[in-house]
Length: 62
Image 1 (cartoon, rainbow, N blue to C red):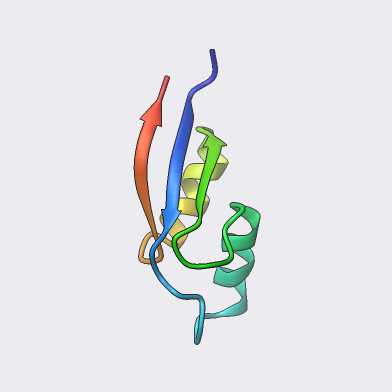
Image 2 (cartoon, rainbow, N blue to C red):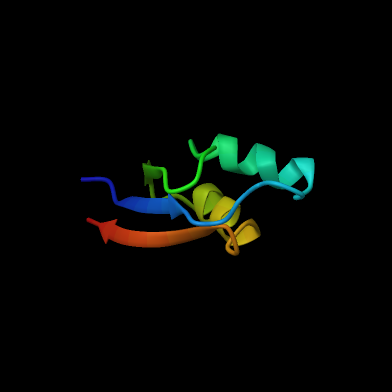
């Protein structure tokens, strides 16, 4: 069974660099308070770490 991670967007992408906005879209988030469930891989963790001020980890499964 693959590990999954549930993240929620808590920060606005307004007045943020385009790279950070693209990272949000890559994680499946683009509006406030959206929740996304993703596979827990090193690449996803790196994306979360790069925009940690805009997302929060709700739950880790597996």
